[in-house]
Image (cartoon, rainbow, N blue to C red; front, side, top):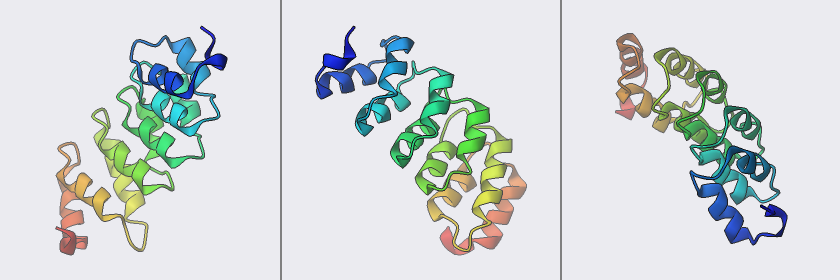
Length: 146
């Protein structure tokens, strides 16, 4: 498959397709076009090693899609909950595979800000995996948000 001669639309469709082989996704992850990398980052067939590389992308939207990918490892989620981009942190909090330990890490990181992100605190507060004591602290410190 010669991805160098494909149209942008064809590359995007290939990056979106969950049946695209991992070696092709690896090549697409290096594409200069943001929307191709973005789609690779959300593809459930993207390998863990490629997700790690995409998590270093300068575009927050690519990192956000990595954070939401159901194949993103707990180790990588641990890193993404400390991302400078609040959308990345929010998306990581919503990842179905996130652990309670990582949620607590995110809560501690979030409360270190003068103005914590309200959307993230709300996701944390209503998350079934967040320990009860953390919910009490959120409710006590940020009651006006609820």
